[in-house]
Amino acid sequence: MPREICNPPDPNPKTPKITLPPGACDTHFHLFGPRDKYPFATDATYEAPDATPEMHSRLMQRLEPLKHEFLWNGSLAIASVNFHKTFFGERFGLTLPAGEFAFTGCVAFGLERWLYACLHEFGDDLTRWPSCLSTII
Image 1 (spheres, rainbow, N blue to C red):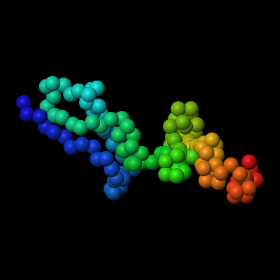
Image 2: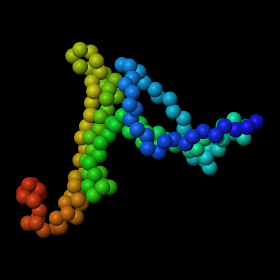
Image 3: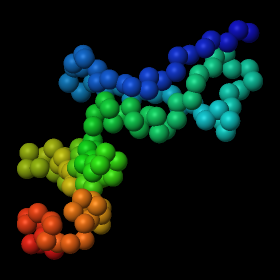
Image 4: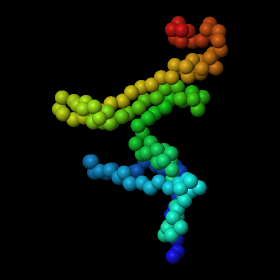
């Protein structure tokens, strides 16, 4: 039986340009691979490139960003803002006066990461640091 070959996942997905009706969602996705660990059945009618959970997470973050990281020097996350939507409201019964589930979020700061970035930027002599920082240390 001939095999159908599927297109690989888009490595650079974009936010959809269409506006969906209120309450509409599509949670449909396929996970494949890695092929060397999870091979296709010998009688499969199609083949697809790897589509791993990590690839799915990147896609979901692109479609609806729930976490925003503040990067120092382009690679070290020194803080983040996280939106939980109604996840914790539903799990813990947190509701607003009108009865709808609470929308939650949090902010995180990696103090040791901020210190690392400041030491790298300004050195270990506090007199060289900006006064807004040196006065609080």
